[in-house]
Length: 104
Image: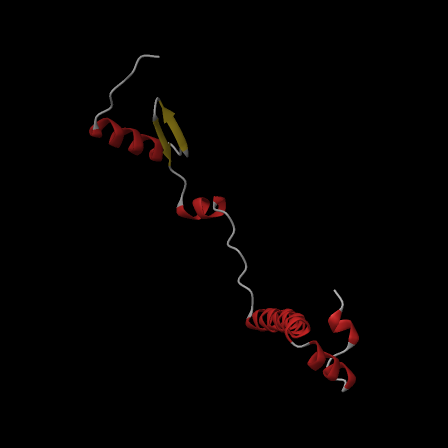
């Protein structure tokens, strides 16, 4: 196909003619026109992601904090075992730590 150079006037005429005749899409060489109405164009857009509600976000935050605290407690227990094993035994004996806190 021969390369055609379209002027601005030619492109305006193409758009006007396509619109008058109900053409929705038109391609000519490297020129591609999509003349869908805004309503139709919106239908073709990707759907918007659902925004989580506030209750869900609060539950997720509480779960994150609970898991983070459990991890922190395990880290603290591991450090106590290394730094002061006698204090750790005392805490286990007093019920401050459960035996399963010392096992991984």
